[in-house]
Length: 128
Image 1 (cartoon, rainbow, N blue to C red):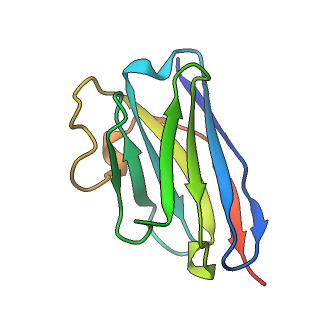
Image 2 (image 1 turned 90 degrees about the vertical axis):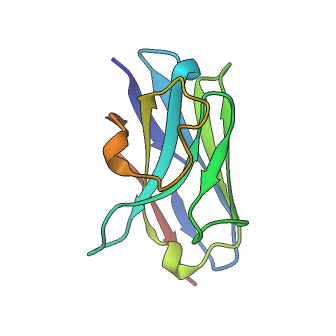
């Protein structure tokens, strides 16, 4: 059973950066697509980025050119680098995974319903 644990959240000033980690255990991520999602208070959980087994990526418009997703299969971990953070980025950030050998899995809308395994989330707060 795949298990995911996020880390790296915290409090950061506007314009700052953070790097989140999504560490997997119980299985290797080699054949899994991994997505990052976030949920702000009172809002729906939003898909922000996705990375396929071969490193193909997709980003929501809200984070494009600011956030970068990468995977390190040797470490069984997926990272989310977040730059130029703004108060509207404040949310709980979740990673999720699904067994997905298709290299084009991450195209289109990053839909939470397509992902099977979820981490517990990590809080990111952007405030001065």
